[in-house]
Image 1 (cartoon, rainbow, N blue to C red):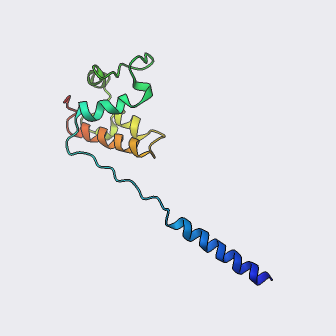
Image 2: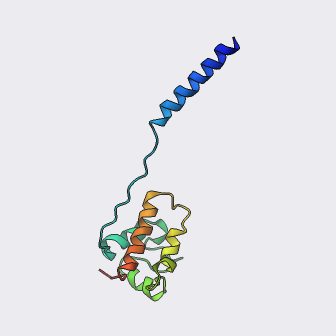
Image 3: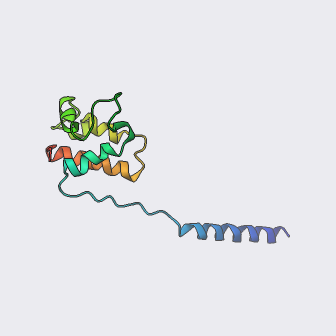
Length: 120
């Protein structure tokens, strides 16, 4: 009787394992364009974040019209070492970094700074 229970337990365990094994999540590929545009790539990052939307007076003015000037005047960008930029650290140190969108935002911000943080 014990042998039958052991065999049944093994069969159930193996079947559960095999049924879940095919459902493994594949990591998403993050594709970033060769040229980063401030208007098309950076501004949408700030517009998608609830804390940076227009009308929030508890943070600097990150509205689309003044975002570039604010980033430059508040020294949030380190042109010589983009990885040490405050802007980059804000995103790379984000507790939500495991979300693909936040990882992509971090890559885009870093690449934009490396390309000379143009206001294009």
